[in-house]
Image 1 (tube, one colour):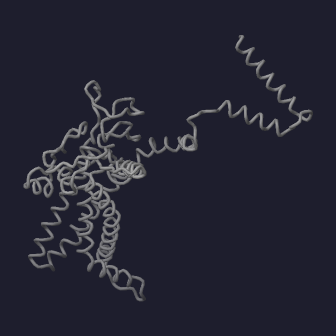
Image 2 (cartoon, helix red, strand yellow; image 1 turned 120 degrees about the vertical axis):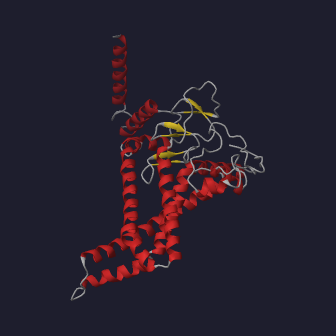
Image 3 (cartoon, rainbow, N blue to C red; image 1 turned 135 degrees about the vertical axis):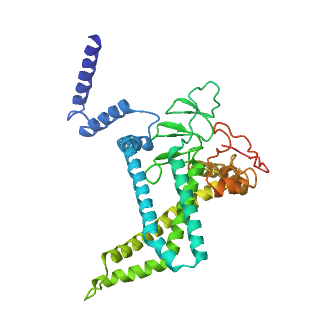
Length: 357
């Protein structure tokens, strides 16, 4: 009761003071405006507030929509990827393969059958493993967990190279990115990073293979479609028209995916060569710029030589692994647990970093 009376008295005093600053005062409306502005700023003052905080607060509803509603988009896109890939495979088997068997030489037939089926198996295997394999998360028991920082979302120790995924709402070991609306509907992290990259690589190779192999068929089919609108129209059967449109659809789809996915594959190949993830790329760039201004040099503590970085990423310990683990489907685990980053056995020479993150 007393607190309410005090609050009422304070409001009344503020109102009377504002009235005194009216026409009888020296400043009039200007002083009233400045006084009210000062009162408002004093009530809302926060020493940690800046433009970035205000923008984050304004965009918080948008972030909420992205984190919660777009989770369902991933399922739709995975179904779309499976549907489009299945349609291309069906066109190859129904339309192109009979034509290849009738017109190509035995050597070319063997080449297309061997390479095409090998590429298809690699795509299906790595895509299935990428969407079903967990990227890896820090253990729930935090007693023996070594962390280099504390996650502000989980309020738990966060090991090196671990980052919090706002969509999964969990920390992910060696997180690269959350591949949601494009291919996987899953986080790309320590345990499925190789599957993700291999899928991108073999899918790009398959699309390039289809585009090059079907170029002559595409030209003939496109020229035939252009004659549909002549007068009088050509006498193509329904099966021939379906064949022409299917070949054009296959070539346009494969060429488009080869360009888009090929650029993404090259970007990730460059990151792997430098021993970085997508998130670490931005962190290391800022750290490199900061140290450069001080006349210092930054070296990535998780990067070895370019060749060793690829061997660590692909899990190649001995020469035969290039066949059994790279050119053939292999479910082998990556080096380490993602909690600590000791020197892998396949690294030939360790470059001690001058400055680490």
